[in-house]
Length: 90
Image (tube, rainbow, N blue to C red; front, side):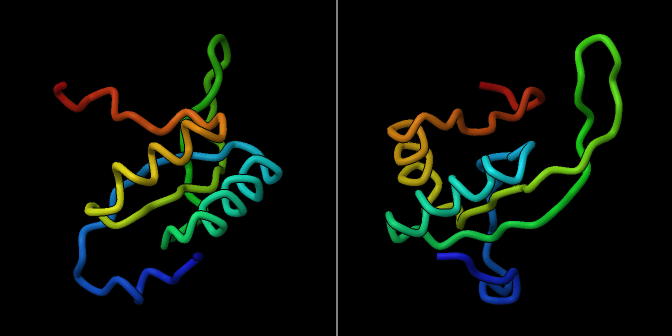
């Protein structure tokens, strides 16, 4: 279920997805809500494009750290590729 950042106070939130289109964001919201996952979504900037790179606005989805694994599994089952940090060591 969609929550506000204040609902999570000082708890750690993890970025799980960046939706580049409104329809994509709405579909993911429906999937997470139906699965009973609490999440926060907010607009933010990202760099997109392969040949011509430019700044764009997307919908950034966050969940609590303890719900990350379950949320990623749900996303994969519904055809969403979860965000992976390219700078994070595996």
